[in-house]
Every structure is written in structure tokens, then in C-alpha cells.
Image (cartoon, rainbow, N blue to C red; front, top):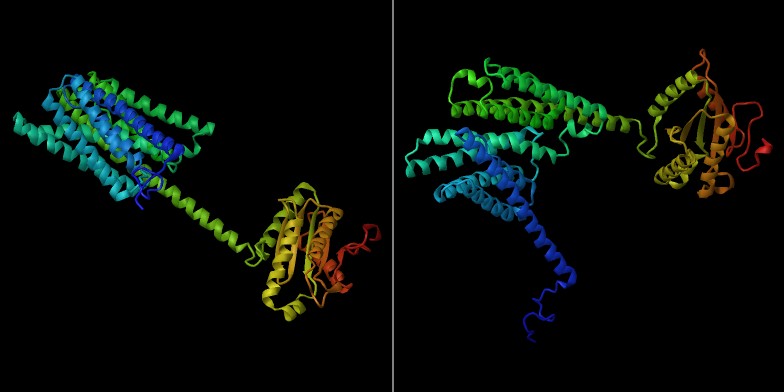
Length: 512
């Protein structure tokens, strides 16, 4: 049977429905919004760069290329075509608005497009979407592609084209364009990328702490003051004074701090130099050469601060991973592998700590020692696999009965368990013991050798208010004596280390 095109019966017909049409419309609107935003951002950045070049008499910085590269690296590949097309239109419009000729506009747009495309494709090919400038490898690849290879290719195209068309000196053209483009990439792209990097520590991790905000503000204020003092005067060559506070920022605030610090230095230095101030005036050079030296200085600032910040961040990460591994292994070493509760090692450490706290605060500490009745006979009758399951059931019942987070239950060894109760009286400890025994009894676990044909527990408990001359072992021995009496008194019993304190958990407490 043949279906008319566009009918529902046609297997090739795709019925989007109202929801599908709405989704398609939203996607189109989303792409158009991204294109419009990219056009405005890149266009404004291009206009600023061209105005700076006209004022300084040479290319100072290329913010438009950095803006478009940042957008591409943050966006999904499906949007690259839209964003790249908007960037090309923005370059063309900005060039024409500033009075650039048609041929120069074409060359300007072509070189910028080639530079951004090379950097974006190279970084995405080698790093994928994981462009984390806090990692040394990502930082190296970024500097290689965005601040070296892509600007060099763009400058090479411009140098050859201007050599052929107007006979310009290719070396001068290459140096001028390469320094401006590399400066823009190195100064403007890292802050944007690091703002989107969750691991840009420590600035992002602690920025919401008031003390951290104040320290960061004070650090940047110090850097701004030093940089302003260096570039406001024109008599002394004091550029070297900028590096100590810059490295200090990298140490204190990590990669995000270093990126914004270099951006701050660049903004102050470029503003002062373009307006005829700064230590480069003392060299007696013309403005284009002063700008070139300043661009080299900013490159050196990036090359010195970024690796230091990345190394410090990786060092912190290594320390955190080491602490995490240590905590994980410590947790494993203090956890019983079968039941998931604490083990004997955890018990010894917790009892010692609890004893010290009780001695300091003058509060009592209680200890429950729990034994599964006739457990060896259970293993012989039902097998060790079933025995392991029963131990897990008992551990779960104990854990449920111990309701305060400050208390601790452990598997002491074999079929023996222990519970440490913080600031608990004998009456309170007896309530917990009854809750544990009752929880196991309600499970009605068959045990042919047990009292009543079910699995049961014997529990010994003791409570001590520590004295200076006493030791944790005193409490343990008291609870052990109580457990001994419970086991030799018929089992399935709760007994305390006090005269005539034995009770049966099934009987009213008045019979104690």
C-alpha cells in the first residue's frame, strides 16, 4: 500500500505534534538568541580593540577573538556553526563601522576567523570538553593552541597578504599581530573558563566565607596598589615590582586568582601605557614599541603565574586525595567486613575516647556486651553461610536499637557484639539492651538448640562514672562479668554488674 507524502500512515512521516513543534520552535529561538548574544559581544569587543589600536597607533589587544573562543569552548559542538557565523558578521560590522576598507575588512575577518577556528578545534580535539585550566596538561595545551599556534597562523596569513598587496614588512606585521592576539587570548580567555570550572580552587570553594572574601579583596587591593604605583610614574623602570604580589596571589588564591590578577595587571598597564604613562616611557621608545614591550611583559606575567597556580592547585588536590584515601582505608580498617558496623579496633579507640570525655565532663558511660546464644551449635546445624546471615541480622537489630548518633555498636569478634553508650545511666543502658533483645526476638529466627526454638541473645551491661584512678578496662571487666552471669544463668538474659540486677527481657522490669 502506498501512502501519500506527509500522511500519518507513511512510515517516513514524522509527527512532531504540538510538543514536538514547540520543542523545535524553542530550539530555533535558543539558537537565534545565542547568535544574537554572540554578535553583540564579539562586535563590541572588536570595536573596542580597533579603537584602542587607532588610539595607540598599533594593535594593542584582540578581545574579540578571545570572546568568540570562550563562547565556543563553553558551548556544545552543535552551536559552533551558529556562534562562528555570528562572530564573522560581528567582525565585519565592527571593521566597517570604524572605517576600514573592504579589502582590509575581508583580511581582518579572515585572519580572526582562522585564529579562533584553529584554537577551538585544536583544544577540543586534544582535550575534549574537559578544558580545566587548573590542570597542568590543559594549561599547556591552552597556551600552545590559543596563545601560540593560532595567533602565529593568523599573523602569518596577515603578514603574507600585506606583503603581497601593499609591500609591508612581513616581520613587523607578524610581530604586531601575533603579540596583540596572543595577549588577548592569554589575558581574557582563562578568567572566563575558570569561572565555569567547579574545581577552580581555592577561590571558588571558599568565596562564600566572609573571611575568605576579605582576604581575597585585600590581596587584590595590594596587587592593584603596587601595579598602579609602578605604571603611574614614568621615571623609574620598576616593572619587576609587579611579580612578587602576582606570585603571592597565585599561591594564595590558586588558578582563578592568578587569572584575574593577570587581567587586573593587564588592564592597569595597558590603560596607563596607551595614555602616555608607565615605566616604559623612561626607555625613550615610540608608542608602538612601548606597547610591544608591554605585551611581552604581560606574556611573562602569564607564564610565571599560571604554572605556579596550577602546580599549587594540583598539590592541594594530591593532598586531598591522599587524605581521602587515608580516611577510606581507616574506615575500612575500623569496619567489620561482614556486618558493616565497627570492629574491635574501632571499639578500643572509641572506648578510650569516651572514657576521657566522661572523665572530663563527670558523666557516666555505659557498655553492653552481647553474645549470640549457642551460636556454634547454630553453625553446626545450619551451616556457616546461614550463620553469617544471622550475624548480619543481629548487627542490624543492634544498629536499629542504638538510636543516638553519638553511641557506637561494634562486632567485637565472632558472635560477640558491644555497644558504647555516651552519658547513659544504668537504667538507660538497660532500656537499650531490652530494645536489642526484643528486636532479635521479633525476628523469630529458627534455632533448634535455642530457648523456645529461636535465636536469642545474652547481654551484660555495666555503667561507670570514671574516676582519675580508674581505667576503661574497669568498665569492660564489669560488663564482662555481667555477661558471664547472663550466660551461666540460663542465657537469653540481660544482666547488669550490680547485686541482684539480673532481669529477663521478657518479664516486667518490676521483677528485676
